[in-house]
Length: 151
Image 1 (tube, rainbow, N blue to C red):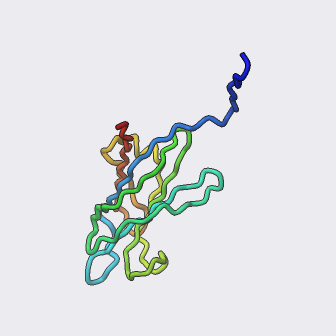
Image 2: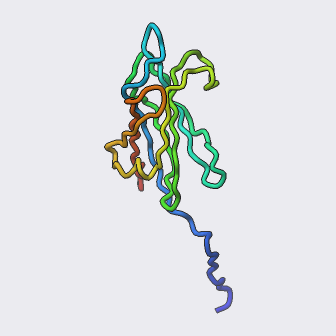
Image 3: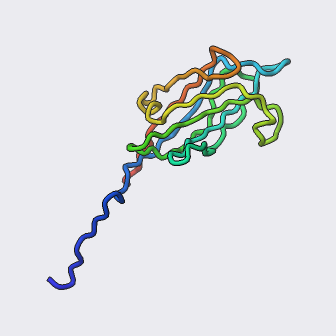
């Protein structure tokens, strides 16, 4: 059988199973950071690099004016890797200016959670304490798998 090329197999190089998921965020009972109105919250999402342990910026939500219970419209699309522990960190701030620098805004709180734990809630949402300025403030993360269309 001349001309046949034997199949090649390289251990450890096979593709890891990956699924795309959509993550949405909401909070309740946030700390009121403003004197004459309610907070103007926005959230910032980070993903922990599995090799270095550093936090990698994913993106931020829009700012919602005058609310302590924001439901952000912004959705984050992430690759969920079944064999890896993917840790997310969400930080919530009160917007005080149009500045993009986080140090120019009031820190409200943060939460760390694994993406697998969020997906385990199966679209119902994983509600956690938002650790920061106030004791009873919470954040809810809802993760849903995006199904690829075969058509």
